[in-house]
Structure formats: structure tokens, C-alpha cells
Length: 510
Image (cartoon, rainbow, N blue to C red; front, side):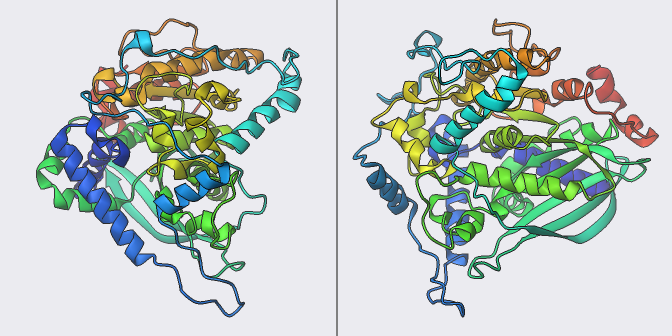
């Protein structure tokens, strides 16, 4: 039992350390760590490409095999469809580069004011909740669908959930029940592509009834274990981290946790867009310009997990929250915005394409997102805004994605500029501020201030919350503040074992 707890902690700290590395931003990190993670990611993607080579022949129904394009070929195909010959360069993580990312606040806001979420496209103000729900919100959704994240297909396949195993174990001193599940995506319309959703859910074994659950979007345990095996020195350093894991902090409240692996049903690469759930729906053909990108597809998978939770008697399905870090922070915000069943969200270091304002020159820019390494997260139309259009031409900005979550509670976090500047914590704060009027209109509380707070100062009195911690690209330091915030909305009681094992943490974080 204790070995299991140590293993969970080990995997957790590895994930915290490494999940924020992006292949396209390696030079924004310490060189040796960049080299190691880059090598592993490249090796993993090459292996995945080898293992997932599409069939060469037609099936018995006469359906053509999936089209296989490299990311560069597909990226160029989209540019050709848009009649774009070149894109603006993204920000460079190398501070000596002439295109180095900007971290100077005085140069961060070259664009005009943000679109007003409470003004209709015809210029009329949004003065009531009904106008918001019936008119303005649909306008904003359509803009995000068409220009940024793409449209989810109207008839996505059903998912059949299978409980692969049920294990009684312990996390720390808390007895838990962990279910490993596999969501089988119906591929009867195109049997040449198979997609399955990997999900685990853990609840306290001694819970008297259904409990709230926070679901994290994460890398697979196999990927993290391979990481630890290949780089034991870094793994040992991470495993030495002190204090309770985020899972243990949830258990201390009598809550549960779940982990979904987005790459199990949609690969995180441009040459995977004719496979996975996107490829399945498109019958192996390349995307149209407004077809959904990977972020939206990953969010779809999170919603299918929520479908399962509605059938699990150990889970309080109306009290399921979602969380993610970095690229999965973007995904968690998209999932929260589009699926009103998610009750709360912790969005960590989501940066550009997530909660950070596009109309802000700080850290990562649209040019990075639109390049061949990350374009697959978005729809094809998004590339326009890296040439010939600019961020100011976007009909929406990220504050309106946060506003789409209203009136439900959202906690937005990030790290210090030194270590997490690429994700631009202040840019996400400003987006939350600008989403505030929608929360107010719907009878909820905004951040309560427009002044950027000192580092380490949580703003958690409203239904929008924010905290910038003093460390780097990690969600860990903000978990206590988020849980204090979430405790206003979720109910749960911890058993004696949980209270005993985490008493020191509780005293340190009242």
C-alpha cells in the first residue's frame, strides 16, 4: 500500500516537472533539460508514427485508407487553402535572438482595446441575462468555432465504457478504490480507425456516498515511467519533492480524483489528424478549414468521461471539476467553456491559446501557435491571424472564452515570469478581469480588482479566481489556494486516516 503511495507521488512530481515542456519552446528552458525532454518527445513521436501507420488498402466496405500527410505537408495544405504564402515568426525563447520573446511589460500591449463581451455584433448592449444566453453567447461561440478551435462534428460517435480493473489500495494512509476504464469509441462507420479513451477514477474507499471529483488531463503513466527510466537523475530529484500530492490534498477533503489521457484518442501531432477521433469522424481524410483541432477533440473526450461519471454511483456527477496544465490547461478551459456540466475548473499556465490574451505581446505568440509544431491544436482558419491578419483582427479574445464558463467558478493560475513567462500569468489575469462583467451580469462575483496582485497573493473571494505563484512552469504551488476556493462549491468529508496523514499540510495551509 505504501509502495503504491510512493509510486503515485513519484509519477505526480515527474508530471509536474515535465508536462509543461513544449517541443516548440525548448530554448525557453535550461539547455540540458530541454535536450533530454526534446529527445524523449521526438523518440516517442517517431515510435507512435511507426506503430500507427495507416492501412494501405480498402476495407470490405470499399472505404479508402486514411490519408497520411506529414505535419509540414498538412500545414502547407491549409496555407494553400487560405491563399497564404508566409506566416509571421513566433516568439523565440532564445534571449539573444532578434525575435526573442518579449518579457518587458512596457512593450506588452501594442493592440487596441478588447472586444466587448457585452455588446452584440449589431452594436446593441447586453443588459440582461436572457440577452446574454439567447444572443451574445451564441455569437461568441460561433466566432470561436469558426476562427480558433473549430467545430465539433454534429454526430460524433458514441462511447461504450468498460471497467478494465478495480483495485483497492492506499494513497498515503487513505484507503482508496481505483477503477481503470477504457472508453471504446464506436468506429462502425469507419472500421479502419480505432480510438479508445484511457481514464482512471479514484474515490475514498470509506466514503459514505458519492464524492466530488477533480479530473486532470495528463500524459500517460507509460510516457512518464519511460521518462523516469531514461533520465534517472532528474527523476530522483523530482521524486524527492516534499509535501502531499494534489491527489492526496483532494483525498484529505474526502474528494476523489480522475486522470484522462488525451493522447489515447487523439495524437498530439499534425500528422495524426487523419487518425484518432478527428480522423475517425472524417473517415481518414484531411480537415476542412473549420473542422475541430486537437484541443477541441481532447475536450470532447473529457466530456465523454463526464458521461461515464453520470453513471458511477461513487461520483457526485454534478460536482466534477476539470484541471490541466500548459497545453492541457488550454484544453481544460475549452472543455469548461463548451460543456456546462463541468462544475469548476483549475486552469494552470495555459498561456497563448488558453486564458492568455491574444492581443498581448508577452511570451508565446500566435506565430508560435500557427506554426507546424502546434497548428493542429486549432482549426485551419486560425492560421490567418499569423499572416496576413493580426491578433487585433480576431473577432474574439480569450476573456470571452472565460466568459463562456460563466456563471460557474474558474480558478486561473500561473508561475513567476522567471520560469513561466512564456505562459504570461499577467495576460491570463487581465483576461479574467475582462470576463468579470459577464459574471456580474449573471449575478456572480468577479475578481474584485483590476490591479495585478503581488506574487503569491490569491484572489479567491469571487467566482473568478486567480493566483500567481513564485515558482516555474508547474501547477503544484497553486493547489492549496485552488482547494480553498473550490471548498466553497464542493462538499465532502475526510475520514480519520486522511485527516491524520495530512494534518501537517492542513496546519501549513489553513
